[in-house]
Length: 479
Image (cartoon, rainbow, N blue to C red; front, side, top):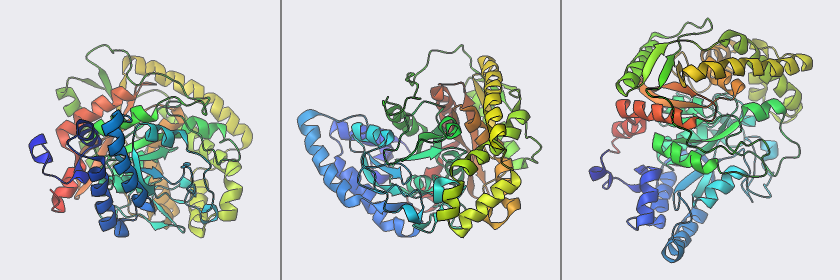
């Protein structure tokens, strides 16, 4: 959409970059921007069910107050007046951090998590809390407390998980940016399924802490889990990720490295990785990857076929280690508070990727350093790696619970999802076309602390393939 016809579009279709600039310049009021998003939520969320804690009344009041602040003192920050959604598994003061679990519906946060605090400090206005599966541990988004979230592209197509509420909210036009998190693909599954974009930040990049938590997270969870942003456009991911990365002393593991890294030798070399770990990759994914490689070459990158080292060794340990960690730290709560569905799904996880014992978990975490060292050395030559995110087109809304084989196929095909969490590297999801009228994406993995480089490449693919949510709206007669 060009700047000429963008001004004719409703404000809920504008990007965060456009909205924030127009609000700062006085061309658009925060009140109008939020009112447009609120109107869209109230019209469409009844079916989509992406926003499960409605905060629109408070958002409208806050927007009016922010317009007064702008006139008197200037913008609060780079997201002044921009509507955002917060996932229900992080603390937002005065609201429940339920994590999709009925038993936790009254767990009221005493203070904001750092990601919420950073968004507020930047001037963002929260319009609601987005849905997640129970314990935020499924590839789709449904729970007994808030129900099922639907994908705006197709009701039977999963919106992904666990940040499926965030991705559906962004795709449906409820807000231009939404918070999510990712321990095995929970930002990237939703982006892949809904044609949105994201970057999974690397380990230690975004501060994480829930004041309501009675205990610290397990060490492996601290190494694998990250907070991030889902958006419709790469530039919005970049803007909001900068905001999330602001230092916070509550997280002693955060690494305060600037978002923009040092210049890299040009032209940047991209490794095009075809390793599948034995999975029978779908031809349409091969075609999408080859097309992405060609577009990156046109954009000035040097693309060479090359595979990072020790993929199979690291893959053989990642999920057994993660599920051992889950069994130790979450197992009792899942048995006590989880629904029959989530218990069944975890049974499939443990059946397909048997958890190692405690000693094996410690040894796997030790060997993780070896794998990451090998990747780091590879990334010295190739600062970026092009991989599939999934090696198959997307999946139906309940496929991971329908059968053990369905669960296995989803996660085997998503090797480059959970493996990258295990290694703690950054990875972006970028548009790569369509299959059977549904969006396809590819993944760009980067060096440690170089989210910026992965987003540069994702933006090149976005320029070549278009913004997929604009295509969704076109099909629905909204553009």
